[in-house]
Image 1 (cartoon, helix red, strand yellow):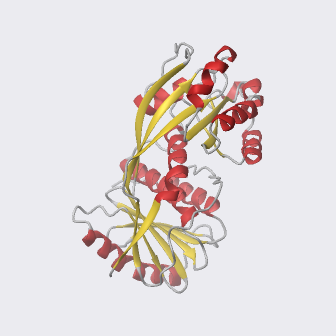
Image 2 (tube, helix red, strand yellow; image 1 turned 60 degrees about the vertical axis):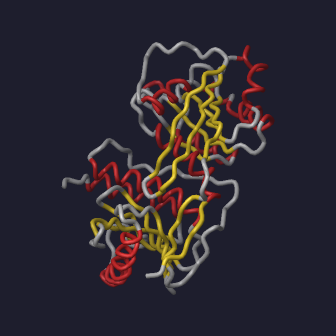
Length: 339
């Protein structure tokens, strides 16, 4: 099995940066608990032998028990707490398990969206698929505390039973690439001759995650960005649970207008979960809005931020999955499993 170790290492570094100070280490292990790659927060490159030995001793029995719990060999996600550490186990395809080791006082709930995104990317790396190692910074309006600390107890993490279908809207000026983003996400296609959306078009797509035995279905409402459709848009914005604000990194006006879109959407749907997207990053020579400017605006609006290219597909899946994880995080539950 050939693995892009350079990309895997870059992914672990991005993950480490975003999880923050409570992170002790991250490991990619096989089903038997053998460490394939690892990164310690302190050393940035390798884990010392003491940590490797201690973690390996913990990982193997927990993995064995989880694998037995699911006869299919697919176990999803679990947590295990010791006196010193909190461990998150997240399935990363058929070959690997992604293990996050946190300080004992850390909360695990804010880490799950990062872990699911990382596990998804690790699975792609193992399959030889194209993937960006970047883990975007996620900003949540409020932290959830669904998973309680239980020393020496394996907890299986899942989403509360039920069907999760959310109305998702895309807001932003005309010609910023909203329709192209939707078609790339839903159909994995890109056309150079898309006509401007007239009013609204509607498409559906499920988001699935490695390690999460549930899917999120988005009903995507692609809104016309032109000013003449503003009056019509209000009825479509109402009752939306999820939204993506899109600007074109080669169009300064579309960036400046994001705050107007933010206010319009929040007025119609005050409880909506939003993320901010800077699209068309493939047009490097034409870029007029920097990554720093995008990040500054996202911090002002308290939104997660990601940059995409609908043309190449870069980070398109990540954008929609970031939004899905932001919404469903509050539905996570844990069930004790004896080991």
